[in-house]
Image (cartoon, rainbow, N blue to C red; front, side, top):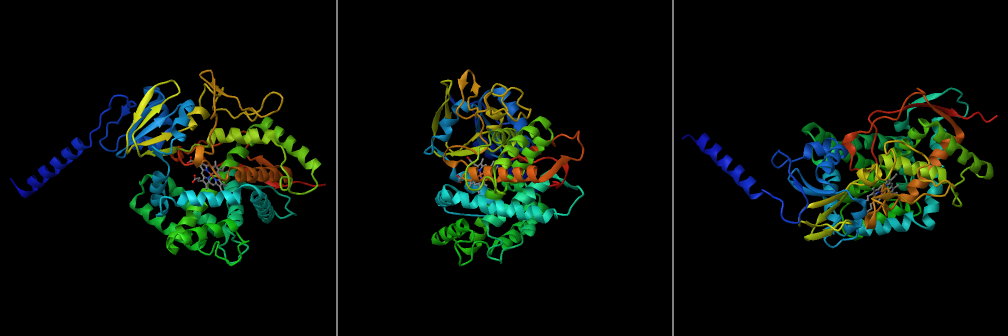
Length: 489
Ligand code: HEM
């Protein structure tokens, strides 16, 4: 026997030992287990390619709860919205922070103490809710107007053509960056266009970074783009003047007090750029895209806005006092129902008995993960929504025009009937700021510009199926539109 044969046999033995030791079978009271046929990898490829399709297939096979293997991990997926509280309400057995830390490390190469995100969230709440929210609305509105003005000179008579996704994402990103990262006030901040260009490259690799599936070349690109973004963001929040981007000022101070070094601080700021800017532009795109391809919906929203603009004397109608826009709110809610697809993931840190709404009880194993995917149910569930694939701008309105909040599944009213903002203690802190920003942007666009599809028969692009699980979905391709300032005379 040669050394090579001996070595091969040893290797084979080790592989066998590995699979024997890591073999897993379903125990009594555990959810149905589906390991897939590929050892260790399990369903990882199908999961990553199109999570909605894969999980819908698993739901048909196993029902509302099942455990799948993906890249060596076991994930229990729960798809019954009536039972979501059993997961969201238990922070003792089910931990949010550990998995968030894994993602932070993979995407931003960022390591923070376990209790840091909770403290950062408190800081953010202080700056994004209550009185401070109005100040932020007014600052972002100013930036939006300036950016739009810069895009279209007042004497512009001709149509300007652009992809709607690019238009929404770039404008809202830049306005958000200037508002929160003080790129303008401190005068030493990086120019928003450079930050946006680098950010888009980073965003394109984000899902692969999160899954740890970057190829060697992509790894290099991700590394250099991350480095460049950290450099661009380095001056943000560092002025002596706390009035300039006060939230970022407070966040950096918090990191400093925790003894986090400067390099790590820059990566943390990049993470905040992603958390605050990654979803607003895509959400505005889907809303405008659906409105432009549904003339009846567009007319309804325009009518509501024109009533507001007739009553208002100021150029920024939503700045000083809340204005009711039920039609717009319903259209936005509907666009988000169709295109917001976050995973809500928890790590099982203590064995847990999960009681479903139908009375069934299942054991969750310590070390596994639990994942809710509200996109499949309730958001796209035909039992909850009639023709769930269709955009219906008034789906969240009652006949009398009031807000509709009663949706049912299995004859019982749902507490969670759409969940674009997550839920529970880890729900989105920026929800109201995001809604106000999108409302201002769409208002400004629809009241000050003529905006239309280049091809009147175009429909909204398909969804990029590789992005399920990461907040707002993005389109595969773009929707070409043309716009010009409205003729005022
Ligand atoms: C349309 C826009 C947005 C959508 C759809 C959205 C959605 C979400 C979702 C689904 C989560 C995760 C919840 C979970 O894991 O359970 C989240 C978390 C978060 N969002 Fe948003 N978001 C948006 C805009 C914003 C904005 C504008 C800000 C801030 C200015 C923001 C700040 C945050 C923060 C800080 C968290 C983390 C909360 C935590 O650590 O527990 N988001 N968001």
